[in-house]
Amino acid sequence: MAERMRISAQRIGLMLTAFLMITLIGVFATFAAPIPAMRGVLAEQAIARAAASGDPASMASALAAARPLLGVSARKTLATLAPDRAGLSRAAALVAKDAGLASNLVSYRLRLLVIIIGVLMALFGIALLGIGESRPTPTIMKAPEP
View 1 (cartoon, rainbow, N blue to C red):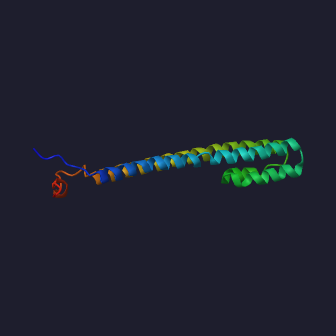
View 2: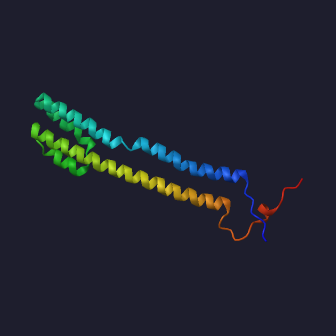
View 3: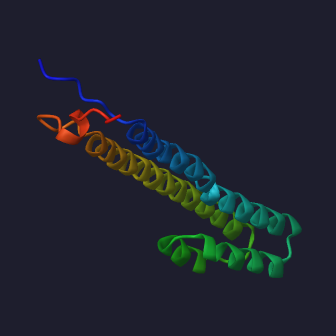
């Protein structure tokens, strides 16, 4: 019967550290996830304040402020809107739709990042522990000398 393969505490610690990296990436990813939604909320608030004021100059500035927060197709639509209440309501709808799409994209990319890093860390752990080896190496089998 073959001797059981002994794995050092350093290897186990390194593998645990590798898997804890996934946790850290997930935690940091949660901070980035709400950014598109918060931008959308801020732009919608500015649009609502401009619509409530009824001032054409503030309506035009609200439309201009919403422009950098939108995607390419929404920017083209925003450029054709008139600075009145109907244009502002259409702009608010564009901002809400674009913020939803951006949030979905960020969520997808973050999930993909965590999955890829998780698979890489698992492969790293397998390689580190030598699970795929068919026979133990002499270094592992050799007992420490007194």
